[in-house]
Each structure stands twice: as C-alpha cells, then as structure tokens.
Amino acid sequence: MSNSGEKSKQLPQSKQLPQSSAAKPLLPKERVEFPKEWDSTQLWLKAIKYVEKATDAGSENPDDYVLWSALALELLARAALTSIHPVLNADPEEEGIHILCAFGFQSKNPKSIPIHAVFSRLEKIEPEFKTHRQICNMMIQGRNQELHTGESAISAWKEVEWLANYFRATEFLCRFMGKSLQDFLGKDVSEQARRLIEMKIEENKAKVKANIAAHARVFDEKMGTEKASLLEMAKKNTLFRDSVLCPACKSPALIEGEFMSESQPYFDGETFLTRATFLANSVKCSACGLRLSTIDEIHIAEISPRFTRISKFDLHNNHTDQEYMEYDNM
Amino acid sequence: MMFARSQLVLTFDETVVPSKNMKEFTMRPSILVPEQITSIKHALEKNGYWHGAIGAINDGELLKFCEEFGQLSMSSRQVDYIKSIRPVLASQAPQNTLSSRYGTDAFPFHTDAAHWRNPAKYIFLYCICPGSGNRKTLLIDLSTAQFSSNDRSVLRREVWSVYGIANPFLCTVESTCGAEILYRYDLACMKPSLPTHAEAADIMGRFVQDADQTEVCWQTGELLIIDNHRMLHARGSAVTSDLDRHHKRVLTVCK
Image (cartoon, rainbow over all chains, first blue to last red; front, side, top):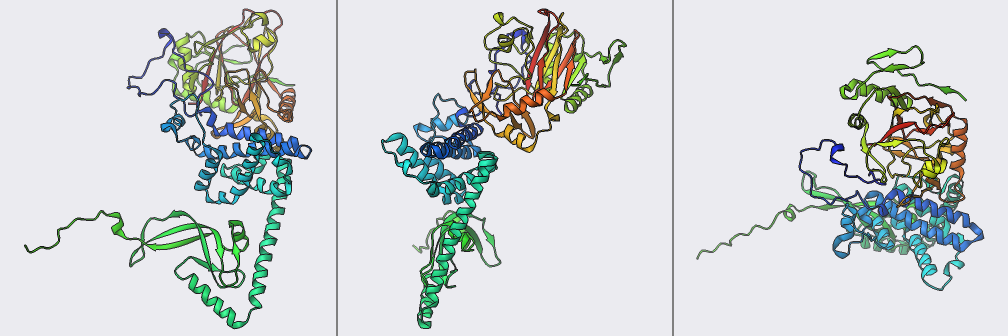
C-alpha cells in the first residue's frame, strides 16, 4: 500500500538520517505507485455508495433507481478491471501518456478508457463475462440517454426486464474480485437479489428445457426415413468440425465458441499436438433445428460450455526457413 | 469500567520501584540489542501497546529506535518526523486539529492518521513532562471487541468519507492491511458518506462506551508505543490546567 496522504519532506541536514551510498534511480521525485483515481478499492467503495443510493431511491423513484444502478455498475466494472492492474483503465491514446501515468509518471488528468472498452477488456480476461454484456450495455445506454438527451427512456423500464440480470452481472464482477454479492449490496438487499437471480435462472431453465422438448417432439414425429436423412445431413455438416450431441434429437450438432487458451505443444508418440480450449457460445443442430445461443442456454442443456480442439503442431512454424542453394551443375 | 495498568516483563535491566505498581526499566536506544526489540514487538503483538521508562534520549536516538518498527512518516503539515504534543487552548490551536475542536479538554477515542490513505501502524509517545494535571492517556483494544458477524460486516462495508484534507477519499472503519485487520476511526475527519450509512458509528459508539480502558499514567522519560491499527486511544482530562504537559510523537507506517 502506498504511503499516500502524507508527503516525504526534505529534513534539515542536521536532522537527516545517514543516507545510503547506493546510486539513486533517475525517477521523478513526485512518482507515486498509481493514480488515486484508479485505485481499485476507491472505485469499489464508490460503487457501494452509489448502489446504496439506488437502494434508497427504490421503487418510489424508479428512474433514480436505474440511474444510480447504472453508475454503480460502471464503477464496479472499473474496480474489477483495476484490481488486475490500474493500467488496464488507462486510455492508450496521446502517445501513451495515460499508460505512463498508471506506472507512476504523474499526469495531471489521467484519462480512463470508455466503459465499453472496460467491458471488452473484462471479456478478454474472463470470456464468461460475455454472458453479461447485454445487460451491461443496456444499463450504460440507459444512463447515456438519461444524462445526454431529453428522452426519458429509463422511465419505461420494468424491473422484471433488467433487475435480475443486473444482479447477475454485479455478482460476476464481485466474484471477479474475490468478493460476494453481500459485500456489495449488504445482507438484506443481497438476499433479495439472490432470490431474484434464482427465479431468473429457473425461468431461463424452464424456457430452454421447453425449447429442447419442443424440438425433440417435432423430430420424433417425423417419418423414419426423413429422420435418417436428417441424421446423415447433420453428420456431413459436422464432419471435421467441433460438435456435440444435440440434447433434443441426439444427432451431431455444431458447437462454436471463442478461443480461450492453447496448451504448449506435446508429443503423443507419433507427432506434436496442441490443445486449444474454447468457450461455447452457440450450438446449432441441422437435424432438428435446435439453436442454443448463449452460454447460459448451453449450460442449462447440460452441455459443457468448454470444448477443446486438438491440432497438429508443425515444428517448422517455429523455425525460420533456411535458405538453400538449389543444385545447379553449371 | 475496569482500569488495568499495563504490566510487562522485559528481560533486560530492571529496577523494581516500590512506590509504583509497574516495573521500571532502564534502557538506552543506542545500546538496544535485537532481543530487546523482539521483546517489545512481542508485547505489542500481545497487548497492542508497550509502556516503559527509557530515560533521557535525544531526537536522533528516538528516531533510530522508532525505525526499528517501521518506516518513519509524518503528516503533510509537519516539517519534522518528531511532533511536539502539548495541550493548547482551542483559540490558539492550529486550525482543523483535535486541539482546535476540544482545546485542553479530553479528546475522544480515535486512531491517529485516519486521514492518511495508509494510516500509521505505530504511535510513539515520549514523555518530556507529564504536566501538572495528572492527565492520563487512555487505551481501548479493538481486538477484544465481541462484534457480531453482522456488526463486523457493517464495519467492513459501510462507506465513510475522509474529509478536511486536500484529497478526500472513501474508506471503511474496518479493513485489512495484508493479513491484518486495520481500524480507522476519527470522527474529527471521518463521517458516514450517506445518511443511510450510520450504523457503523453506532456500533463503534456502543463499543467505546462499554469497553475496558487501560490508563497510562506518565512520568518523564517514559515511552508509550501504540499499535494504531488495533488500539483506540484518547487523551484523558486534567485535574488542573496542564499547559506544561509535553510529549514527543513519532509515527511509523508498515514497511
């Protein structure tokens, strides 16, 4: 923790303690650890303060409830990002002056990245955040409309449309920092939030299961020959591609996702291979037409959201081409 | 309310003084050996404070001794690591200080440097003159507090503002410094940031009212070291005017 809030003063020589004889680094005198503006703890506390204002507004002032909630969300997201390192909040423009600020080279007005960039960076760090992008974008858009236009868009918002997903997003961001929803909302509100989240999860579960059941029923009612033909088509579509068993009709279904990580090359006895891990965001079955479009839906369908792809690793990729002189008998 | 005097046994030169219920130790910081420092640190860890007679020392020796416990630090209003502490009439006190608020009266229980982002870990109070008023320093150990889990949750979550400084910031009454619990509490520079966040003030107020207090009586040449992350301290009241009371204070932060 930096020793901020108090300055290091130059004492009169008679009162100075013996100095080290080691050479001093050539750094600016006023260098600090990082800007106070990007202190993750301060952002976290401010987020709590704003969410308390939202709670105080409550159902009597629904517009204020949405607005303060949106402001709290932005602060919470920045707190999560800066908990990794404050530089992640720095605007990369102006020849990196704000990035330098994050490393203690003081700038008068360190500039933060816009909130959509905060969300993008969080998603890069933790792809599961993608599940919450929609509600985060919606909250920020509502805030912008409220603050920058004459429109009263958020007046039309109904809690049932946003609140549960908002709590899910804030819970994710709290967990990102090793904290709980109770740490953020307090005991009473977090209990209400937990109930809302569980209700939403149950609602989503019911929708997805009903969707799967409907597709299964339609597929089952088809003629045997048609089913066989659809199965063949599904097999062809998924040949040499990532696939899973469709939860509705049990045909091979295409699974797509975002790249997360890749292992170091390993030797399996015959060749070098790498294992790439992806986070699924889509499952499509060409046999019964089932579509699962979010990681939540995939999870509810009891399909593992992470899948791997094993690829051959060509050692030649790691070596520069050696130039050689072609044989010439001249 | 019980008032327990500190009684610590240290393993270096000691002379039992029959008139006092406290062992008096003679110690020169300039000849302080590591075992003595270790012993004092052990006492600090156990009790949250250490009180002993160290005799006459100069400023350099005092600072050198304090450096064994952390990095010297001072407020932005100071010009020296050593600050003279004397009772001052409110009308004559520097602005925006406890003295400007309370004058020569008792001070409320508080932690020092609550307005620093990184509050001081140890307070060193060296007595130059105890004063004519038989004024004591009072201590409360927060590590003995039987806070309920709800109370603790409030102390850790409720957002307070530190004000009256160039760069106000947010804080909580209870937080952590590494693996250690840190308390920050000074109503002269801290207040709940929202009207709905006033529970922590009640919790602390009730605790201070009911807690056991340790009284430190002063003699010239005595040193009191307080673990400022754990202990609340207060200046007691004087039986008579004691403008002659004089201490030197040094603060250190975690290295």
